[in-house]
Image (tube, rainbow, N blue to C red; front, side, top):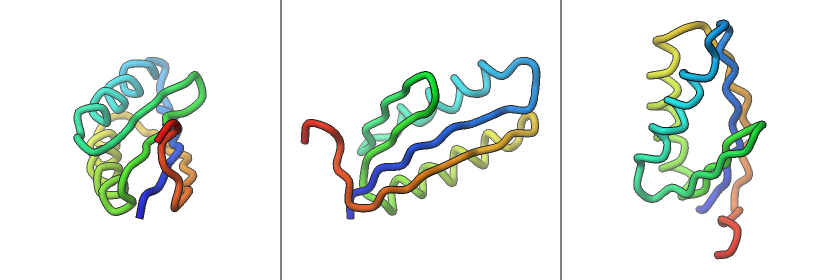
Length: 83
């Protein structure tokens, strides 16, 4: 099943931009995902199981750094725009 996930990451540190950019850059390395970023969140489209596996991996990597919070919405059955 295709799905879309909207995720925002909030590092609880003064230097918040580098961990966010690192997370987004890592998401973009995974084949089979469509990743779009705006000023408030990142949207990810792909097969639900694959998207969730990638997010588990990358959220775990990010959690090894400064304390942070993730806010996420999952929309099952949603294909990327223009498909």
